Length: 289
Length: 254
Image 1 (cartoon, rainbow over the protein chains, first blue to last red):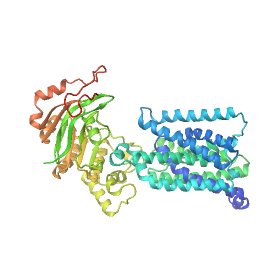
Image 2: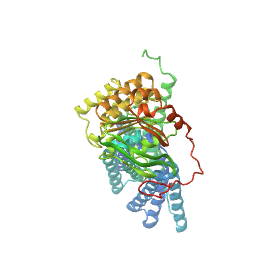
Image 3: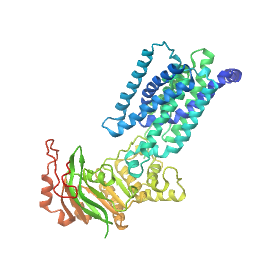
């Protein structure tokens, strides 16, 4: 019974195994990225970036149809350009990062929609918006796994400067010039992960698999390392449980994954050990010292 | 005596308005200098210039053979994100950046050094505490421990004893004395004139333009302090362009 519910769908159907592999790879990369976005108070940046990527992918689609590489390249280019311009403007002018990002992602979005409307083709952007985790082909799977690998390697390389840059940017500036490049590399990773996310879940839900696990981690850990571990694990759990729920009930798989992650974050919000609502309402008797 | 820092007709400021105006002078290696002056006198601006956070409008700072990492800096309001989930040990360990860099490990010897630095500031036992749980004084102690590990030849402290109690400032000033004893160059922005008189051999009295610089008793005279107090604090939006009459680049305007 348990086997037929929890394991059999993956044992019997190849498309479920592929979907699971994709979801797990996605969680591996998006988990730590989401945690750093959250800690830098950039939780909504992922969302804005997802919009910035969309037009690039659409242009790729216009030029060469539903071609994985064209759409990926388009998304990456649009995302990188917006990320780099944002970083540049925030560091050289009075405009803060959030305002700079708003400027450029809106421009990118408007530009993309304009190009599509001028071309006049009635393209189906549903794939870009909502992805299809149940139809991952070999190419896409390799791309997602490759992105996750690159993400983890780059994160390992920039981890220390990135953490210091987050906690105490002034100190980072005084000991090294690595802070700026580390931040830029991090923004690039955000784009890379959103692009790999949109193939599986679509641009909109890709942000969910990044930010919801991070919020879950925040409620259970006081230490950034543990927070990342929890975020990644809960992202993977959401992927697995979401696919199962989708398989058994027939609801769309992408939203199912995000709904599971969302439920987990609501549970964490209520019962979390670190600053959860219940803990705040009933802190227990105070200690002696 | 060699100079650790040399200011040559230095002008620093923001948006073309000078906050430090035509400062000349040298900070000798191993000097312990108090930088005194009213709010808005340019103390923090001078320190930012020394560290290299802001570039001079005119003139220059000669840092001899100092590399950027040789200068340890404790800003007045550190841009620390206190809600970041990091503990005291890791925070202090950042002081080892010059030795460990982005990839170097923290070995047993380094751990020992971190423990010693924590003991020196009286924070033994706080290793695992999240920085969010520290009081203001404990935070300042932690930042001093990090400075200890930085092993900097020049140490710049911007009002380090503001908003900490007498016990904490006494403990932390012991570290400043220790640095002075080790022939490190220390510049400290201070507001407590009596404290400066008691403990600092040398003082720079700044009121945007330097009012006096030298041995503390000669600098902190009632006349000098009054002069410093009279300087106006606000930028004059209508200020005319300042044309240098001295220096190597006459006619440069800021």
